[in-house]
Length: 249
Image 1: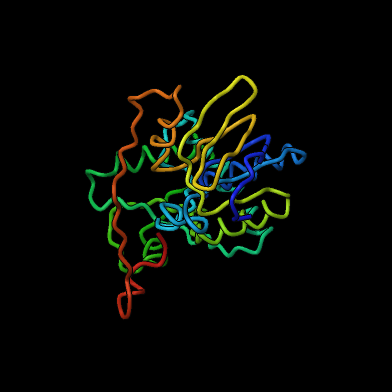
Image 2 (image 1 turned 90 degrees about the vertical axis):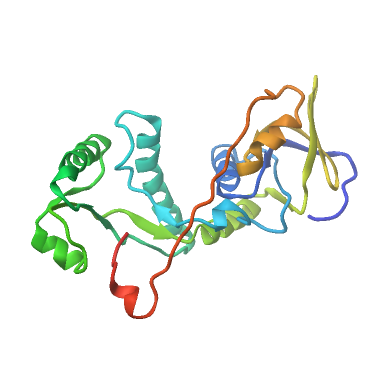
């Protein structure tokens, strides 16, 4: 649906943002409450046009996070949920695994701490011999190593496309090229002013990624000091004869 609105478009839930967080949030809502009328608003012409489509593609194991933290528990549960979704929707992924290597004795305490965190977080990881390390990564040298076999990779843009198709099948209204300009909360609901007209909803979820603070400030009740500070990552690809230098992550 991409035409101008009549001003009467009304939903139970509006999700702002067509990255993987917005799509997954909408998917979770309709999975739990399939009877709801839901719209997803995205200013770009398609899904995953920002950070979601420009990242390392890693499905994290959860080994690094502080035991007992929400990040640790959600990383482990999220990896399983991601693999299950990909398997059920024909999205290819790979459990390529990785080794974490102490390159000299000074790094052994840090490696031991990661081994402890892995056990506490329920992550499948364990010490391997140097012979096994050479089998897994022939070009790596170190004094000790952990093997994390369940770490994986996936194309998150393809995951996003599969989520979008699942949402359409569930009756969601995906609106692309529809920038949010203002959000006003009234007694009888929330009015979202967009580039193509007005949307009314009982609930609005802000999943606008790196622009979430800007969207929040369009709502008069938002805290003016909330600010997202992004940073740029760099990724390098080994090609040609160098492609076999690293086998896992």
